[in-house]
Image (cartoon, rainbow, N blue to C red; front, side, top):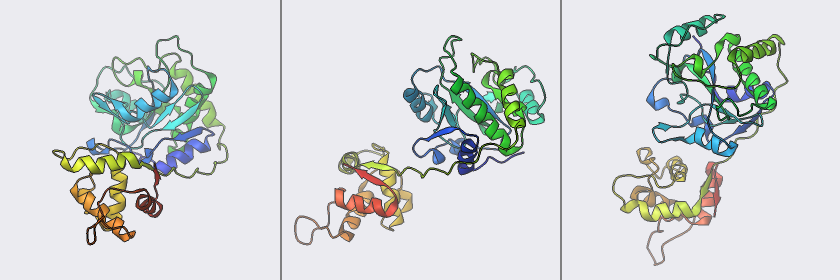
Length: 310
């Protein structure tokens, strides 16, 4: 039984294996962990996306679609051979699969049994990579993409001390699935075995600095003006959570109000922050209005690690 590696270790191992990695948004914290456990992990699973266009593919795999929320994998391998990290933790990629296949993966058997049951939670037990391809048997698999799949599989196996039999395709796990289509998993496992046999991978690249979140001031101000009058606590702009987290850290907003809804409590907390920055209301004795302004927003961002656009 292997606990999942940390998000930073996952990134480090992919870089160590020589992959070109793109970090997408807050991938480290984007997951489905609230819906079930993540781990122990037993292998790594590959899929094809049935999509065309790298940007669109990455976006779908990060956000998901109606009926299946994202992330839909941990990494998206596009046709140019890049690995786009879109989430980490439990992800909606493997679904329910065959318990006999899981036992074979754990035992690293040379062959897998037929996948004729769907009773085991694969999202808990497998790292997942979606690969940009239409999956029609005609869409080509460029050499750079196949090499990236090989390297990604080897990276995960090398970290955990697994061999190539810990790598499988979705079609080997869940009845009725055909992905990845266009190459055989047997041939890919042979490639991964050859890479693992070479011993130590390439020298690790230094970790790139994490990208700072960016808040769109116009969208934040719109939320501040409209959210308090709405029924319930709808989230109209995702950047509100970043703003509220900073206000919580400042001791101005109760943690239970960190919900992404720019309600009256968030307006009051913003007003207090504006007053700390030296701003007051239009009339003497009147408090600041609680609608974020550029200067006070940039000051909060500078202190709490985000940038402000607009």
